[in-house]
Image 1 (cartoon, one colour):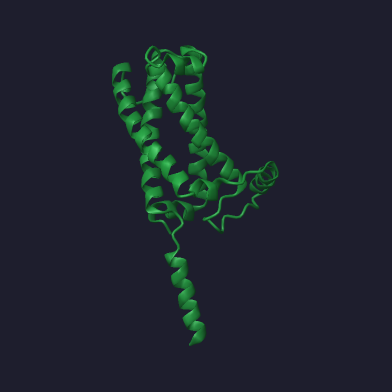
Image 2 (image 1 turned 180 degrees about the vertical axis):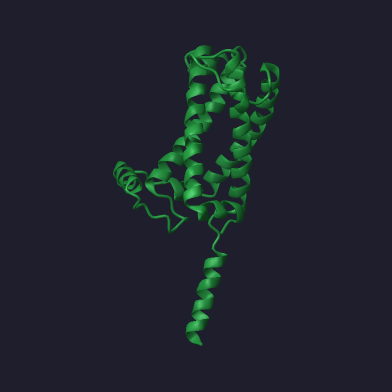
Length: 209
């Protein structure tokens, strides 16, 4: 009877353990939607004045033409900025960033990278990030901040001339914006792939447990 009671208590404890709080889940999915809309409309905007010798297929762009893409981009921009700002504030205030993302050490990154490449990286405890995850999440947050700032520098180069100058001018800001976009797309591809490989991590981001 005692063993059964302990077992029931342990089961209840495991079931009640919240890995992803409600605010994290809500902001995560809102950010995901905003980012996808911005990327797809951003590709259409890029096609109007390419930086490199290629353009994106119309099948993966949003807006249909430059004017339509700009409307989508600006609408998603406000969602991303407001949602992202709330995420950053709550991340610092609640101590989530400190608990989840620190410390990050070169030794830990190298060790966990080797473990990941050999299929030996453990995903048993989803409440703790390994060093590779810490580095990627910290990196995508930094890329998100840079893409917003460089986007503002491109959008209002006269009104925000000091910000534009900080990036090295309008054209340089466009390159920063593009490479930050590429970094975020790369992160999203890896992120989705890992979610499919470790389904319980996706479940935790949907129901919290």
